[in-house]
Image: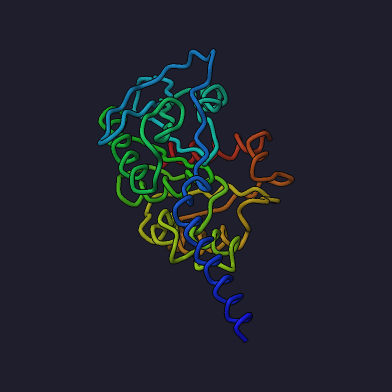
Length: 259
């Protein structure tokens, strides 16, 4: 009996310890900052925000149209500049390097990134009245929250999810993840507040974001606001390698300009 009690206490201590590890190191499991690429000469914009200096990768263009883009948790957004420049020649491009990414100072968190996104939008909107807010994977959570707070013209969500908290809970079912996680990115909460045309671009075989999560987000929008485009034979990290991906984005923005 005493042995069983000692074993139970040991198991409890180990379990609590693992919960503590998950709590204190959770952001290292969400964010994978990419360094500023060496040898690249793409234009950048310094943007001062509270507690950090951000590096925004840009392609300048005069005119009313702009794209503000938020990347995935391990994405170097700079690599999108050539393809986006070709696909959207009449748009200025502003691609955010999150805190700790691409030369930006500071450390990433949901609260910080969300505030930084507002600052970037306000900077761009003062120069370009028609802004398409675009986000991929983690960036879809940033983009949808921003679009619920600022007057975006259109919203494009690539490989989006309903909630990181729910995704994490499904990956670690033995732990009370929903109580432990701080950066929840609950996109489903913001979806009903969106009133601009929204496109969800979905990888047919997304191995990172389960389809039920994307479907739950889609269902959270009010009727008629959002549409889905499934890119066949693609995965979470390969969706942008197909011409159909760029074509889907071009179609979304072309529809936007016609409205």
